[in-house]
Length: 171
Image (cartoon, rainbow, N blue to C red; front, side, top):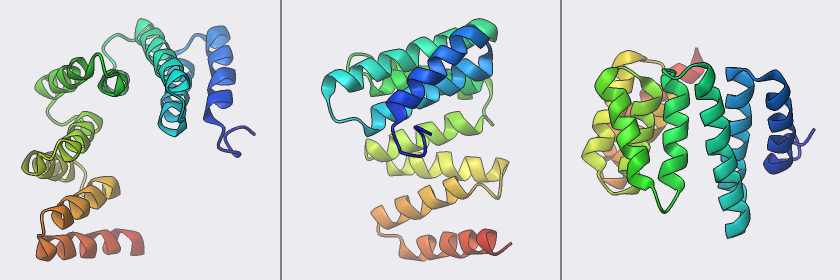
């Protein structure tokens, strides 16, 4: 019910309570995801800090059940990136994931998104194109490539990716 109303913080609170009882990777990951989403939506610095710290706690609890889960590590890395005190810790974590597993989609996507934010458009393009070599139908990577091509003024490539994206949506 709280998700339907867009109240991620309350939804995260209840997901956290469930995770404490269930103590499974999936329940902790879901609670972490909701706290992270709440962090993205909240305006208050204190609430953002609280939700981000709770997300970290949840992902760390998830890792206690599977310490090598790269998807959880990639999500945890994004929390560190959002933390003004530890952004490079998160970037290093993502780079470690792709060094061990170059085809890890989530880590490549996250690195691409961070590259856009930092104005490193060529790196972003490389990351998103890498994702498409792994999964040709990854619509998020296509949308990000369209975004980067528009940011760099490459309308021909942007239109090319739009056509591919439209082809995905019509199937």
